[in-house]
Length: 286
Image (cartoon, rainbow, N blue to C red; front, side):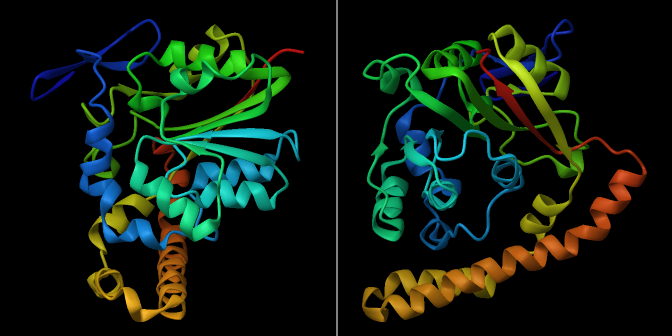
């Protein structure tokens, strides 16, 4: 389908997934140094500005008050929202700097800088009620092993929630980093359902999100806010009040973009454009 440096991107006509050759993850250092994961914005995240797939999960709220493992938790803003919803949350992420922000900003403690496979070695099978993986599956080299490990950790009747980009989205709305080595696989609704069912899960729901939000976010950078973030980070004595003010501005920006996106969403839905994001909730059989 495409070439990206040393990687070729292929499509399986049987299961409709796109996959990189070689299927090789870039490693922890990649995620700790890539601009996407170490810019000033990571210090000003908030549980009041969740992503669409995360909001879908909290509306579904399966197994409330259960034990939840959030893979790819980043700075912990979703983990905090899940805690407030009643879950007992453990977080995994390869970016140690983001985990430290999660500890300092949100008081999260049960965090681990490791992969799902490494974490699972020390966790009994069937010990979790919910596993979430938002914008993670496309990063792993062995997605079916990833799903199998998540299923093994789930108790009978437990839930697996996943969010991924849709490779069928129009090119103008595709994220620039939706390619190897950042994303090793690309998913459609059909391939996502097939993978979850092949992993032994019962798919409860699949939702599609038509949106120009990421397009607006890329092209309406609002550089003033970014400069304020940089200045706040360079002045550690500015105090907690300024930090909270910048967080509030960041939330306002996100919500303004959501409002600006409403007409675009309505138009894309009306013309039945391909969705940009997919969310699936699946259950391990009792």
